[in-house]
Length: 92
Image: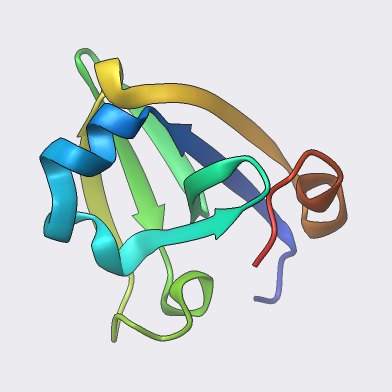
């Protein structure tokens, strides 16, 4: 990515169980568990919209995608440089 600033979204285990294959192409796993990297987040009431680029998911998608996750599944969101993300357990 040209810009190394990104969001890390940690979700509850319930999210992975219920959403399963729908979010499988987007997740990473690190010391803190499963999470999603994205370049932008928009809060939409009961949902959070994540904008994900191909480079953030090892080219598993062909173009930028927007997905919406129910807020009840979101445990933690952080924003910073790639170096900052690694310091709290987000790794890729």
